[in-house]
Each structure stands twice: as structure tokens, then as C-alpha cells.
Image: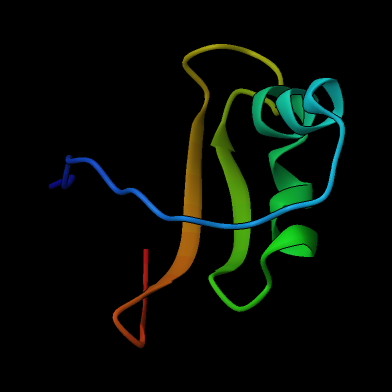
Length: 68
């Protein structure tokens, strides 16, 4: 069973907009480097890092608890 929903967070970064977009769209594995206190990692389960529709498992902190 999968859970679906919307998760929003405010994270301040210092980066050019094109680099930020690149990280979010094709280099998700680098998000941890920018926000290690909130995002603990991301893994590809189906597909790859760049293909739309790929399945990725995100490990993150919400209200002090690590979730998936």
C-alpha cells in the first residue's frame, strides 16, 4: 500500500536557479547535500534518476521524526 499526498518545506539555499532546477529534476541524490537536516537520502527503486515516472524513495524529517 502506498501513501500519497503533498509535502512542502521551506529551505534556504544559495544557488543559481538553473543549477537548483537541475538538482531537483535530474540529480535528486544531491538534495541531501543542500539540506542534510531535513532530507536524509533518496534512492531509485524503478527507472533512473532522469526519467519521468521513475519511482524514488525519499527519507526525510517531518516534525522531528524521520519518515519515508
